[in-house]
Length: 231
Image (cartoon, rainbow, N blue to C red; front, side):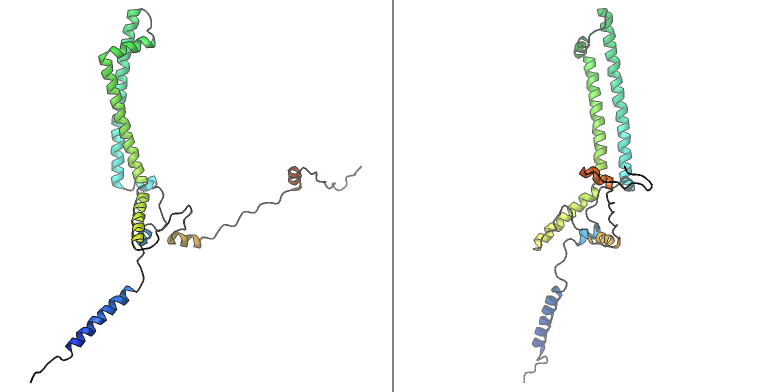
């Protein structure tokens, strides 16, 4: 005679599988769709940040070192540019003095420039001065770019995170958060504003009789002082 030690095994496995499926279904129907802007609002509860002030920028040691190195480079290049200017000016004066001695009078600016243009040494000095000026300008521009990058770093990070959140919202079939001219404040800022009492509107004083008369052009009768006589 055949004996099956587990007659209800198949039905029990099927019941367990159904329970798992229903658990997954109900778990997915709990809190709804995730908020694509949750990370953005958590990092920037007050919305898009403004420029980072200088005191806060200088709290970053790497930024301080970068700015200090940039300032030192600018100072060095500025000294080199001034030295190149001085060399060009000295040689220019040498040519001017030689022309004046040869001509017996002060050369005109046109004659001086013509002689300088023909002189190879002057052309080399002028090129060295131009190169020094270009290097100085580039170092200054690099410093300004580093400062501006740090100033707007938080705002650019906000914009990048918002672009990712907008893309995630569209992928999930949600409408992306639109930026308006006067957007509603984020939750943290709105709560602080709600806790701050609004200032009472300033009261405008009532116009005097003289002001009304000057505005309308209609003379206003005055009340005679006590004891005065009217003729």
